[in-house]
Length: 114
Length: 110
Image 1 (spheres, each protein chain N blue to C red):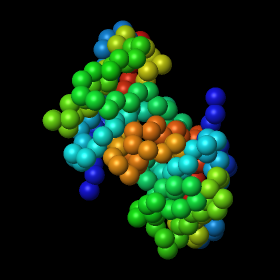
Image 2 (image 1 turned 90 degrees about the horizontal axis):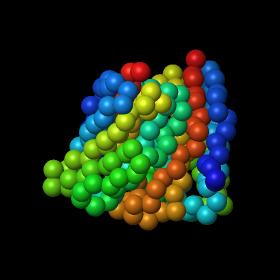
Image 3 (image 1 turned 120 degrees about the horizontal axis):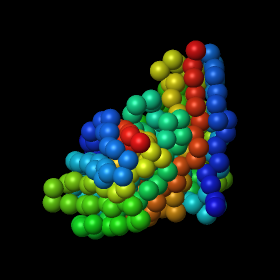
Image 4 (image 1 turned 135 degrees about the vertical axis):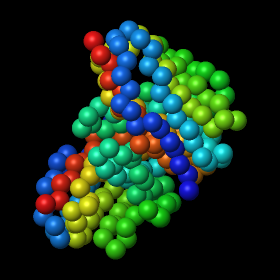
């Protein structure tokens, strides 16, 4: 069964350092999402791509977060500098796109900022 | 602001009983509704989706949608200890995004 691949699974970084997460969506899925999930909360959308274009990054803290999907396939989410409040699980998801299309999540990347 | 509200629980049910999980949403433009199950430390996995008013059954799971009341529910029949997890309700609209609730923690007691 096709899966959304993410790496690294776990990352511990010091405050003010840079960190990056990588995601490879299910083959053929045009829409890619990065969500952030803080412990005890539901996932919150950070950025949505349609192919290589950003559809929505209204909730992305652009002073420190950046995301790209240069060739419309895999994607990178970067945080620089990391802050203590960034500790969370970063979830990549993908879908075929279109109303009602199911969104499939990767295993997530756990970030701990110390 | 689109919101999806869920009772955080925990909801405790005995093994073999029916677990009932509820969700309300604020955006009347929402067209699709999803239930995800999330085990502790894991990512969400899709259980069911529903688009039309009424009931949709899949094995032990039944999703119910009432668009007039902006209400979605998930029934789990013959609950098993392995069903113990957090259940996330999500609503989707035309932008192909999902807005998630905070989740309801279900505990099935053997």
